[in-house]
Every structure is written in structure tokens, then in C-alpha cells.
Amino acid sequence: MKRAVIVLLLEDDPTHANLIKRGLHDFDGSIVVEQIFSTEECLELLKKGQKYDVIIMNYDLPQKNGTEVVRKIRGEYKFKKPIITLMGPRHEVYAEEVMKAGATRYVVKVENYYNHLPLVVRDCLKAGAEGKDRVAAQRPQAPTAQIIQFTIDEQAVEGVKGESVLEVARRYGIKIPTLCYDPAVSTFGACRLCVVAVTQRGWTKLHPSCVFPIKEGIEVKTAGERVLKARMMLLELLMARCPDAENLKEMAEELGVRKTRFPVSVNGDKCILCGLCVRVCEEVVGVGAIGFAQRGLHREISTPFIELSDSCTGCGECAKICPTEAITLEYIDEKIRKKRRVVAVKCDGCAEYDNRACVINCPTGALEVMPIEDYLSKHKISFNIELRELLRQSLEEEAEG
Image (cartoon, rainbow, N blue to C red; front, side, top):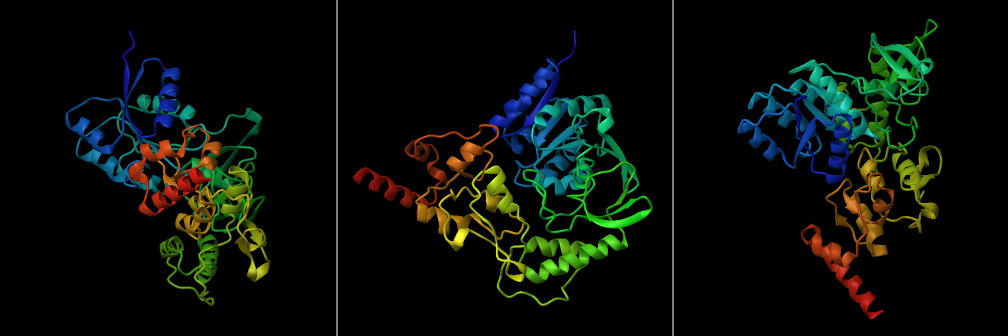
């Protein structure tokens, strides 16, 4: 009789947890999943000596402190079995840290990641105990004729025709800095920070990796004097435009850029014109309420005729995807939701705010529509005083009208 494989799943989102459980069970009926909802529960179970074959933990759950949790599991509780961390695309920058802390694999939570997860579990169980090798996630399925082989930093890699250099590099855990890229939307190539040196047919040129399609036999260098000089110049230009953007300062500090040689803008604008907000509004939300306006030095992100767009729902997706916090949820609350009398409430699911736009576009159905009165009684603590008062006034006016 086949021995059951006991998996401890640290995931607080019930929808994603159910998808993971179903995927694991369909893959192998002998896999038993025990779900917990907090890191405290996980550490307490290990402290009591509970035995598990694999731990799967959501890195995003412990408020960006997943690396420390992995380190505690490895160090304090001497857990010798595989640890698989699930990381959102935004937290993939911590992948190297979490691998050094003792994780066996990390899986980026892109579309249908839970279908690939059983294969990772199988590979980890075959490999045995601890392992710190960074292993590429499964590449998209395609006929053999479409598989393309090339090198990144002298490492042999494979990709599928149509993929970009950046996509393949991320799948293999090779870090390339970028600000304008997000797997949820189409590529734009605006910030150019993902520039790499590509050698083909004996010629070497710099290309933005997010829009450069992979080709057979090319050699890609993600660092080197020429590449670093280009990135430093681009960071200086961006710092001159947005001197108050904190993540720009962090990226510049990593490359040794202390200041910019160009005239610094004094308007306090944090927008780097990456276009992420425009693309997510059009491609994901399906509204297209914002876009580029003006040209040249006066180019900006704006609404039609610089007025509140009738199609804007105040969903907050533009704020969530903005890499420099040029758009914030507080700004949306003040400029859009209050004028529209849209009630914004904290969400316990996959988004930071819950409203009808999120419900319609949620890919997993984790959000549901319910009367606002029921939502108020269910999530009373989540409302701040100002928004609760706004809701009360709205309900009173509706009753009078």
C-alpha cells in the first residue's frame, strides 16, 4: 500500500487553497493536505514535533516576512523536508533571499500556477531532504520544434518561441531589474532598466529584455560594464524626473548611483510614464478610463479632457500596479470615490479593496457581490470612521429618495 504524503499548506486565501488542494489530489490521490492560516500555527505545530513531508507556504502571508519564517523553520525547528514558497510577482525580488534562508523551491503565482505546483512537489520529494538549488519553473507547453535554446550569463536555458528574454530569465531565477513590466499586462518597454547585452551573429547590442524575443543560439549578458553604465544613466534620468520616488533611490543605491547630473524636477511628480496603470485599466479592468496625454516633456497620465472620467469605477487597480506610488489609494478615495459616493472597504481576499469592478474581473471568483448592508455587518471593523459616515449618509439619502 502506498504511503500517504502529508503536506502542510500555509495559505489564508480559501479560494487559492482549494485550487491547490484539488490540483495536488488530482495529481496523486495519496497526497493529504493539512491547511493552516497563520505562521504562528505553523511554527507551533513544528515545535510540537508534528511530521510533514513538504511545507508549502504563501510568502506574501506573513506581511513580507516570509524569508524570516523560512529561516525559523530551518533553524529553530530543524525541519529537514522540502519547503516550497509561493511568491507573488511583486515579491519575486526576494526569491534569492528566501532560497538562501533555506527554501527548496519557489513558485511564482502567475496564471494557473496551482496546476504546475504538483510537479514541483513531486520533484522535491524525489530530491530528498534540503536543497537550495534554484530550479526554473515549468516552461509553457509547446511542440519540440518551438523550443529555443540559448544562454543567459553563460547558463544554458530554454524557452518557447514568442517569449521574451525577461520572461525566460525570471523563470530561471535570474534577476533583471525593471519598473514597467508586470506579467498581468502586455509589455511596453518604457523604463528600459531591463536592458541586457545580446550577442548574435558576432554582433553585440543593448536591448530591453522585456520586449526582445528569444532566438536560437543568442548569448545574453545581464551585467557587465556596458550594461551597468546604461542602467546607471537611465536611473539618473529617472531620478531627475522623480527625485522623491523611494524605489528609484533603492535601485540607484544598489548600482552605486548617489545623485543625478541632470536638472532635478521640483514639481514632486513620482510618475515615470511606465504606462502600467494605463494598460491595467484597459486590458485587465476593461475600462480604459486613463491614458497618455500631451507630448514630449509635457507628456503625462491623465483622464480625457483632464476631468473625472465617467467610466472610472475607482477600483484602485492603477494604484496597486504603480511601481513608484505616483497613484495611491488615498488619492482615489479623495478624488474619485467620494465624488461618486463609492464605498471602499478593506478586503480579506486577493485585492486590497472590494468593489464591483474587482468582483467582475477577479479571475478565481474569490470575491462575491452582496448588499452593502450585509457587507457592513460582516466587515464592520474594516471600515474607517470617515467611510462609515459616508456610507450612512448614502443609505439615508437612498431611503429618503
